[in-house]
Length: 604
Image 1: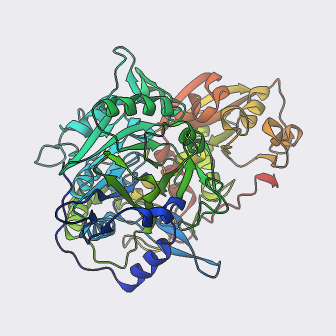
Image 2: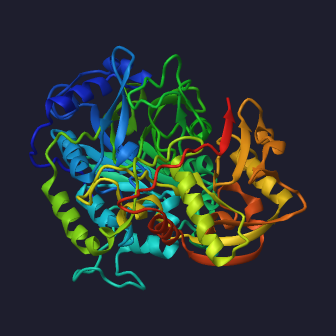
């Protein structure tokens, strides 16, 4: 799909211009060398000499990642970004919503005849009700209208399995629910790339491994991969029959393929990310030195990806960064991520050398920009949201409970995590009165519950749509028996094994308490003799009945021991359990107060 200049749209307001002025300071270290290029750049980005196109052509790469079907502006902290001010203080800025994202992208493309829009995976999955209720068809329609050119798959593209992913790519009505409108779903206009996802039977990539953008003699190749550890964080059914290969090795393999085809300008779309030293989107990631401001898996991947790749667009960690990380030859290379939920987009200038067909990497410039909500809404996106909202309203607007204040999902232990664990414990006891406790994975909690009305439902009212946004996976609540020794091991797996570098702290139901000592290392961070259930020490030889969602009960998120329980009882879906708990324990006159989040004592 060729990139074309967009029609004229209303200009950004003063607020946006100020934000972009701040964001413009966030550039890769190599950008300072741009002035060394011969000739001067014309208004259209073409570096001309005398008569006709010059040697260098600026190519605009707009990118974002981890949209997760957030078509409407996300609520609470999920709809804000932190902005670093010139005086060193920070402010939060409301951000996100495809009506605004479309306006920002279309404005950014003006005057750029050579413009590509790419994404780093997780466009769908874990989506709010407006998209998730319809198996993310609304999001694919929105991405088509946004003129997305290409994306990698992410782990969430596999939530409903390979066949459903193929339907999102190729179109067709849902196999069980049929068509939602009188029009057949046509699928994505853009290619999903899955270079490192192989069909176990054929040994071939599940989807296209790469894609080449071409315009007027300029060629840029894109290779798309998701994290090798996808099977650890997706249900077993979702990745059945698939194998996931090493990210860097796969990118290097297909970079050679592209080189043999004469494509020397290459961008990797990698659904794996890092952790910057600051949560501010406009933090200078390269201060004090190249790569010093970011840690995590992407740092290792970037250092092992061939120098033939010119830039990496990443995701998965929902962090915001524009960094340079040295390639295997020791030369700086741009690595970007635009947070999540459509709150940011990245604008990168790739200077294409027509003589060599490669990117002049010393001239790469990049910055993250805020998708502010002070610009006009894109009318076509408003119509899209209205159309799907009309279909969703009878289900989504139904009240399921009442809260007296915001129920946050932030923190090592969160009020919302406690609330969900309590709901699953209460549900478990309706199925088996001997249920002792419940555990909830933090990654399964996708949004906070906010007190302020978001859709006219009234302050403090929790609607089904809001509950769906919190828990969109349709996991079941399962009961299993574990020995006390196994339960202790589960808690230690939060901070050891696959979770040692990036701990996954389970949210626990009322009655379970322990100390998490972060001054220690590995499994020792969970203090064994501090673990109590209703005040009594855990007996390693006793049997405990534990409720958890089906993802955890299957050993997901690195909790192998949870997959070893006995006497499994499969219950209803987790959203129903939350709805039942809120209905039973809150009313308009007596709303539920946010839990205190005081079950885990954290020592730092």
